[in-house]
Image (cartoon, rainbow, N blue to C red; front, side, top):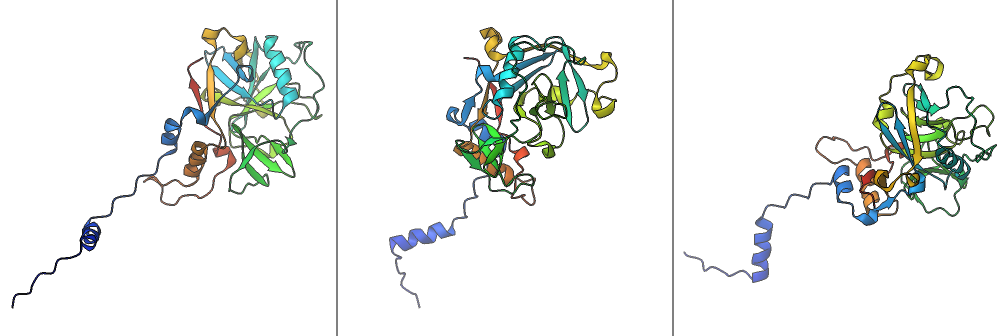
Length: 301
């Protein structure tokens, strides 16, 4: 017996057809590099010309350092004075300790400091958290109660105090045993696993934002603490200037991704939760030293 066909209601028919279609594949997660490449201009902050240090080495390399006056104002003031006085010209990189630091300054420790320096420099290894727009990360830290970002800087926080952590590429002030002996004339950059035990014991004044590869690849010193034993081993520092003190055509421009933007939030989340095909098990965590906001060179204005 032939059965009469029954017409399905239109809505049911459409639902049936939709269910019969294969599910659309989820959109692939964006990589960290894709997030950075697509970030709009509003996600970036320009490093001020008077807070960008340009160091030229005798081997032809150039290193750019963003200074952090909000965290080490007295030391940054001295660093600016040293650069404006051309004090570092003719000095050298004197120490390269494997998995630790590259350090530069006057190897003789006899070169007179410019009279514009303010000495001694009081201990300023941390600052009050109050007044800072601190954006915490939801991940635990070994050396601080909380870590996150303020503006373009990685920041550690505890007990109402905030400080810049000793991460790869961060720049600190060499000093003797007395806490107020760091003038700013001896600087170092971290080139190894983050020595966070130095946090709040040495002033951190900035971060290398370009040219880190030139420092990290230098020959290691064979003397104690990685100091070069022979003067011929030292790498000359030919010139150190603030970008503001350079002719416009020579002035580099650098931008760093800002905290509080959807782009940096997405970048941090992606780095903590890698979902590309290579990763089997995302970490679900992120160390502050793997969360330094991306920096980029941009055309000078």
